[in-house]
Length: 545
Image 1 (cartoon, one colour):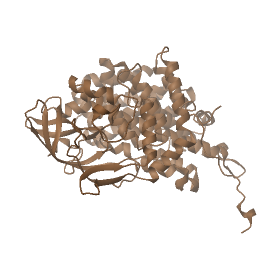
Image 2: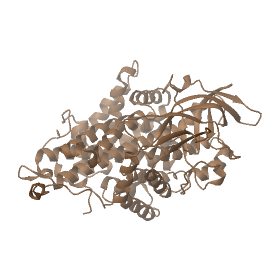
Image 3: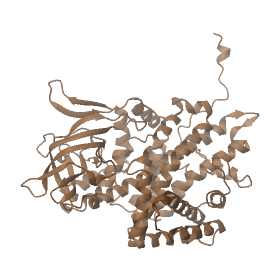
Image 4: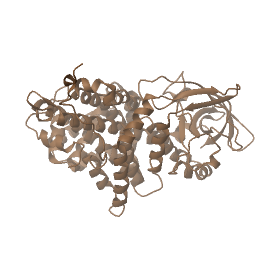
């Protein structure tokens, strides 16, 4: 075949060798806003180094390898002994090692730790999202363990360590550990109070033996797990180590690995407990209350993770259209494509701004901010994770047929996109949790309204949306059927308030006109044509300027 027929023209260079952090203006501005000046230079250096790593060809290769070579289960060794080990591709360990060394499990004990970690999590999971699961659970286990000072003293230094050591060994022999979580069972799912796993007390203080089955247990090669089980005093929280202090393997039988839509690099397992040794965390009968802070922290990571997927999808779409020519010019210069890109960029920036605001509330750790988080986290988790699939799907379409090909990386983003909306409680669970906060915790609603009210008077469309929201909130009778509608409005009002206070005027104006003012269609690319669309797209472009 003649070589002349294979001349390559009008193809887009890969988006590689760039700083994922520095080229994300919404993120860099949020970091500068929420971190004190005396700490900011150090945080920017850390995040810049991580951003360069995340945008490197090496990290992109690791991500492709980890997803192209899913983990495999080995239940027995060659002699018939039960081992229950999961083998991961070396790229998985490299991704995890880099993340742990960058402090992505270390937020609770350092200044501005949550903002620094959330920003890093948003940057690094753009290289590969599956390994974010053990990072998230390890980070989130800390507040649950702090209900027991002795357990916290033993485990927290290892959980927040910047050293990753793969392999199952006694924790005392490792410089750092990872944690997982097991709450759901096949008969109950999200209804964790229907759990049937039994916990029988032993003679030792706080020691139990567990018997039961967990339907979803992610990252089963972690060093420890927080699980729920029925003790004599009711549903309780327990710490289950994979390896006992004497070096023996705990009873932790992995029955199978889930064959999942996305998140292919990460192992999600069904596990059996049969005489499994555990230590109680918190009081008997208060398991949900004990583990709820872990759940809240992982829900925030769902928001951050979805923001990362959206950011990477939008970056890829803008990059592609900036180089691809059609119909006599670059795609990015075509008015209709520019409208689509600007619409996607708005969604991405609103998600990032909200995610970092929530992380900053964790760092502040005041009564007001804790009340705000109580209602803002499930609200954000509901809405941002819902928007992720729509954004990624539209961004993929911007690449046309090239985006539908695995080598582009876009199909992997699309398969990953629904996960965060399901994990840690799907949409209905989040909406109902917001209702509980509204009905039982008036201080949470007050904190939320104070936050959105900080931008009151800045835009008539926000003011009208707040007024409509207050009308909705005034009648909470028979509200369950309209819970999603209410929570969606709360999320949009919150995002609008944040953007009006902190984003460039053209971004805030476009968001308020479309999301709050109703000047918008039912698909992306339906923004009012009179808005500053080119400026919005240029702001979201992922390249050094």
